Amino acid sequence: MQVGYVGTRVEHLAQNRFDNQVSPAYLGLGSQLVQQGPNPFYGEITNGALSFPTTTRAQLLRPYSQYLQLLMVRVGYGDQHYSGFTTQIQKKFSHGLTFLAGYTISKNITNNNESGVTETGPQNALYRANFSRALDTNDVPQRFVVSYLYELPFGA
Image (cartoon, rainbow, N blue to C red; front, side):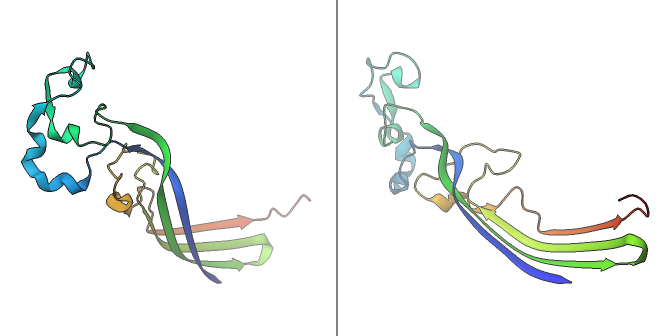
């Protein structure tokens, strides 16, 4: 019988991230963020949402206000923590039969929502990395596995 603990920490996991978000410091402005005002880029930008004479106050408070959004692809920004306790029992019987059973209880926590097979896309974590910290989509909290091996009574 074996009992063990496994713990890992991974930093700089690649993920997509929006890098042109309004700072949370401005959220206190409330509905003023959606008020229209003069667009300083009118005439310079000739197509798209910023080609009109007015724009929202929130747009002008972005770090790069001449862009609607900046998607930074696969930036090493996320982290992940895994902790697990595992137990394994192995029994060898006569005539080449071996039995193995294992049980693991664990937790996998991440702030990177792209670590799973169902990638959920970019997140607004520019100002607070742990904004979306939660159980990972690949988290398997408990796992029980049974296997056996039988050595054939002939051959090398």
